[in-house]
Length: 396
Ligand code: NAD
Ligand code: MG
Image 1 (spheres, rainbow, N blue to C red):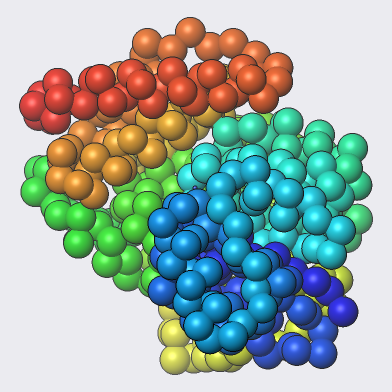
Image 2 (cartoon, rainbow, N blue to C red):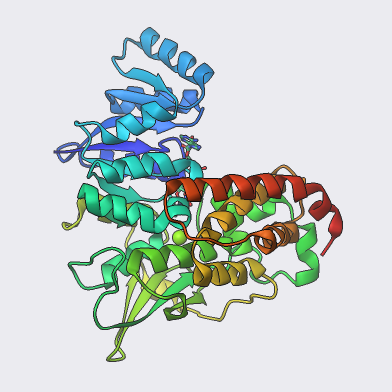
């Protein structure tokens, strides 16, 4: 029996995770759930999965959840706040943590799970971007196993030889080919991008995801974050990770070996496949995902990304090369910019423009410890916020 805590349980990855877990009651027990403030959905999840503990960040939402659970006669304990979440990540009755909180907000609990030696199913890519080397070091010292959930990185993990040590390059690998769907604006002309709405940006052609990652997919910053994630996770220099646009999202990524062999992982675009892979690893378990019908698919297409229309990818590549605290700055500025776009304070091209302006002002330094990383994150958020009005007004 593997005892699992699902952080970000009310989100897109969290819901898919609970779907896979519920298919294997003899194998997994849901011991804890955590989310930000959606107490209604959390109440339903608690009644269905009967965890020992539920953690919310909002005290008001936690109080409503506790009242709802009492009224239903459920025994789940309710806690609130960041410290409770970190304690939960390290709790003795938790074997595996699904880290599926969105943004750098997921870093403290992911780190706590790594330090405590858990199996960490890492969906929260921002924590690897912000503090990659520190997170890997915590996992190494704590004896944790990190398994990537991001579909591309999970695909790469599956294509690499067994016995992978995170952060170290696997022998015989020449390149990693990271596939990108291209997002909803793959064919949108540059001069139309200033007029796109948050709703259009969140209508991803292949995946149903949370709003933040949907916007990241539309700007290609998601692929930029994933480029950094791949370099950290698999110990590769950025020059050996190539981004390839593949609109069908069937090939989830590829690994090229020195002998010219390329190994790819394919499947329908459904996050339950990487989730089930990481939960069952090294065994294979049923995920609920349909078989892929290749003949119905017909053809698979690949093209180079357009970094003129999607400068976020260019910025992320430069940051991957620079290292230090630059990834934390890129991520923080992006979080501010995406939130501003979603609340219609910034137009779509303004997202990359704002990030570039913040990066231009950043004096890079080593990400020596967590304090250095968190200071860079705070500095970038503050600056991005203060630059918002001017960036919003500047036009492309
Ligand atoms: P989402 O917005 O649907 O869900 C986010 C979850 O995090 C919610 O449960 C929310 O309550 C919780 N949350 C937010 N802030 C929190 C905080 N401060 N403390 C505790 N909980 C908090 O997002 P998502 O699409 O499920 O993505 C989650 C993570 O997985 C992101 O890092 C994303 O990049 C990554 N990811 C998602 C997908 C996907 O298909 N959705 C694919 C690959 C990677
Ligand atoms: Mg991905």
